[in-house]
Image (cartoon, rainbow, N blue to C red; front, side):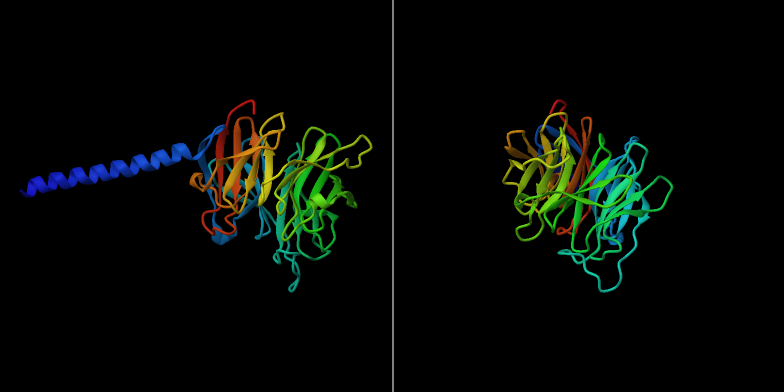
Length: 323
């Protein structure tokens, strides 16, 4: 009798384990939606050390360079998931408050072909706010000062002109700065770039002769042509209904893009006609996704866990070619 009960108990436990495994496997297999698949964790980051990634750019060897927004650090995450801090920016004086966010905020990051990193930093103080540069093996230095009441966020590089474009989330402005440094110029201002409660212009990319900008509050993706004269063209709204959109990345040579919807723990695929569909969710490991980078058929997605306060991370996923 005892042996029979033991056999039944063992069989029951095996059945339960098999059911749990099947449910878990099914959840992983069905979480991502085409054209995104094969989602995996690259790195689980240390929230206690302030490792909440805000923006991302890729190294040729597959590592990801990220900004840790509120710990004032730029770091490199290897393909094996190891984190190496490259620079820690100076803290502002006591009593200084960054506009809207209060804490010092390290935003967008881009990389030039020689390995130099550029990033935006907001502190609420005139001595630190602006665009910073980190050459390989060097120390971080500010190359362009922005107003203390600004919030430089997304950063984009125009490789043809060598100019940097900065999305200002508070002043509703896109600034332009030479990679060599110097005085920033207001490149674009428009109601479409302004905030409507929290943050306005957020992510920014240079693509097909235009600056593309997301507006977090208004849930829009905007396109601003780069004219031959170098001035900004008329602002075009290319997508709507994406409230809480943070950064984004184009999936290929066309105008299809992936966008991080921060508060909703989603990544959406936005088609050239503005229609969009959710392709990744919290079930895939998203924890307030902040930014994306695409290389070939791989998308890297950073999550800052700003409101979930659980498992900031870096994910990688496969995207179907030709998108």
